Length: 567
Image (tube, rainbow, N blue to C red; front, side, top):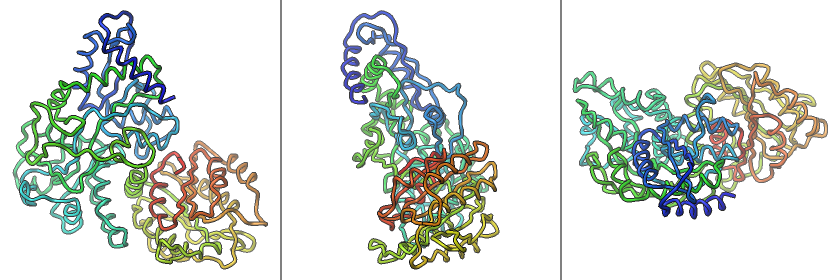
């Protein structure tokens, strides 16, 4: 269907550009990121008034500037999913025919959560590199504009001393903030010390975070007074366009744009045609996109502080000091996803891991972590230096616990068969605030010790864990069961799968929602079995790590999911 729409749209779009006269009206609505909306609107009105039509029917275009997070929330609501960090919006927010968000990360986040969200086209129409914005006096202290810095240098300055006050726009709501988070993550290693450094950097960013870009910009110094400079934000990942627009207001303290290595994903402004549009509107959208590919649009973009999709600039672009002549365009990423996301070099895994790290640090939650200790957890993992599955799981659990903020409450169980009489599960630590029980919870992880010859009492354990979290439900938090297992249910004394599914469906309570997340370890799990269990609850999800050495990454992806999408 998508291919048919694209092909038909391309042919009909050509007709719309080629025609001379038209009658009637096709109304095309476009929601564009606020900074690019004026440029899109000017070209759209020129195109429309110049006789744009589809097979003789006139095309009129309405372009509205909308924050990308707002449109993403509306689309998530329409498709019955929720994106991490985004609250619901009113149904009054209209769904456009064409969406031009500031980044393909929005398309990828939505398509990962909602299988029905399959936009077409997705071609980039503009570009703005993601930079680290610093007040010029602060930037000069670190060697700008002569010295070339990297994200590793920034990470070191963030985690040693307190001279650099960092900030960020909430990465769950801002694409530039998310790109900065991805860049920082790319320069940290996987050993415990490197992970601790990364956690420290994330906590520093969270301390200076803002929900809106405009709020963060207000935190930069307004004068050259030493006290003002010392107490204000001194570094934050923003777009090049943000710096251009800020400096255009002629502030007393201008911002420097630092182009750090490795280059983070740029804002790429994909032209996404929504899945619901008919062939006629799809054709009109193709015609509009072709109009936006004409040379004059690059000059319109330059006036708005944006680059063309190839990374070059149009006439009148107010380039920051040290800006490259052209912003590099990444090679397409491997794997699936939307055309726009692939073209931006993005993949869902790295995106979800970054969002999962941020969610663990900044969002309040309650989680019961339930660990499989059946005999098969003694199986060695070749890709983890010969560690057993249990040892790999303990390491991932310890890393995850260090990531969670004190706003979280966490408990631990283990399960196999006959751990307490005939009961397959055993409580190690009840769900307790990390603010007071972090050490005890860290000790409880060391009790993830396999029972030699033990089988897998999965069904009884899943039901008991769900009931426990629901019975102690706390409003205003994400209440979750995180269940780790490496095998299928084998418990002759336990309930059946059909009984488990039936009981879970009875327990579901919209006023006390509980996320049941099952993380499969290794290639012996029965994915169909796990999905049947998880799907019995509205927010259930299954995440499988065929290579147990990757369980820490899968854990972060599970934390980032707010809709239970299988991965």
